[in-house]
Image 1: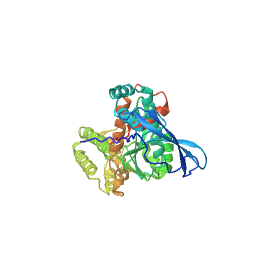
Image 2 (image 1 turned 90 degrees about the vertical axis):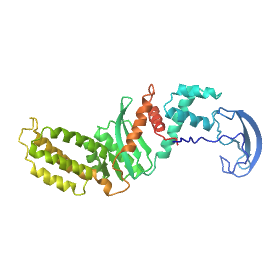
Image 3 (image 1 turned 180 degrees about the vertical axis):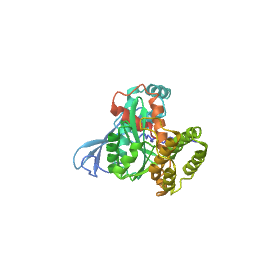
Image 4 (image 1 turned 120 degrees about the vertical axis):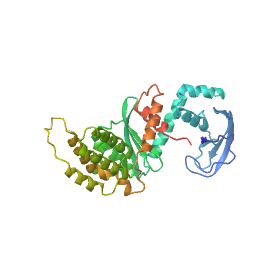
Length: 342
């Protein structure tokens, strides 16, 4: 596998003239001199910056070569700092590597480049349309966060410092995302609160099949050792339904639920194996439509793997950072850490 890093080109001089004045949009200019300027870059050390005077508004302005701005660092150096940091290096390690190329840079300059890139990503994603979104929560650096990922292209839409178990906060956050990004459906884990939220917001809902098969498999293995022999065959039926995901699964589960004896123990008493089986079938019946939502729309994946991958990158990056001094700094750093530099 080859990894291609797309870095901005840096030119030593600008060959063409400006097309418009940055102040009045005028199109006629008078040359107003040029100056050589030192910059920080891995290849180019000195560039030629030209100055022009607009004949309309009489203001002067600088015209920089490609990859150069008013900043001392080139755009290529900034992006290189951001990429190395997002791949797991500390800011001080980035500075050490750049010193091999003869570039003297402070670690705070690298940090500012990461924050600037995070703000650019945030502006670009602010009103991006995303029809199907993966949503998941996790604990990163000791804080609960929520992540929303466009499952069309795998790009992060939003990151928020919210505990996944706070249903009200999650609902408000998803409502805002739906309005901004025109979301039609979300893919989540099997947390019960998501069903209520999606019904309230009128969103399509697909439960990640990886989570479903994991917890159902664990429940079936436990019941296999506890159930009376005449009921063990029911477990095979449930497993087959989870494997095949038939469209009429809800009706089949309902008929199965009616065939199982009702509860005989008091609410505060421990449930019997048959009562556990009955509750399992009832839960599957209740949530079955969210297990097969992907049948109605080919754009909806049946797992939430892309969101899990993003969360893995966030956790990996957070484990190599001593900490963030502000929530804004953490948000910008998280947005940069989620990017795929290919």
